[in-house]
Length: 293
Image 1 (cartoon, rainbow, N blue to C red):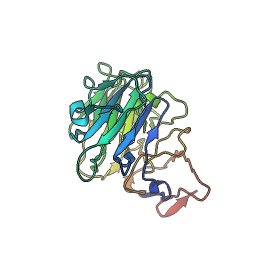
Image 2 (cartoon, one colour; image 1 turned 90 degrees about the vertical axis):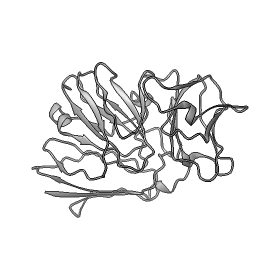
Image 3 (cartoon, helix red, strand yellow; image 1 turned 45 degrees about the horizontal axis):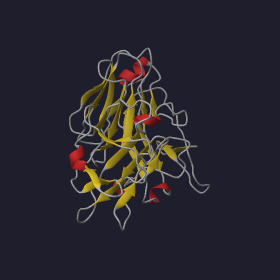
């Protein structure tokens, strides 16, 4: 059976400045820079750790009086490489280059945030296993690329706790207002599923089990055949998933999700979460040319 799913969304993506502020962090992108000054403030009241998937030498971190770092000095994020800032209420990103600012995802998280030892990575062509019992229970991935998102796969034993994926940083994964965009329903479902989640920031939490989580790069957006008892994830462009964030979304250059996949199954379960900011907005889901209300 061939299934075609369309998730059109129109009004949300007209927003140009799309910074997203959580209880313990800020997520900024190039569209959040002030058009005239090329700056964007971020909070760091208790001191913070900062990460970026860009290594542009033209993107600076300024404390209100001087430059304290830039994306090149910060380097690519990984478990042992993160930049720490002392407390201040005047930190800002500043673009000092010519022309258009580079694409980036910038993540500033308070030092008092939960799960502060979580590794943060930038999307790359080669990841391999990023979460297992000898490494970390969870990891966060930043990605501003146009390339297809990496394939998330699971291997091993997850019976003591099924994996979850959030469209947030690690600090929001314990907040009840923030829903995961994926939660495995069974051991078999976790092992059969290959997830591609198009979000500038996501956090994978494998739970307390001994199972492993891997990321694999892809050269195309095609998903192909889906096995029985497996899952696919579709999210609206810019989707965050936290109920207390009402008027903020991530920046996205697309305003719809359109995909096709093959599924040799007897039934298809749809589990959806909707957040409609305005009465005149709507989400329409179509499967095989039939609208699902």
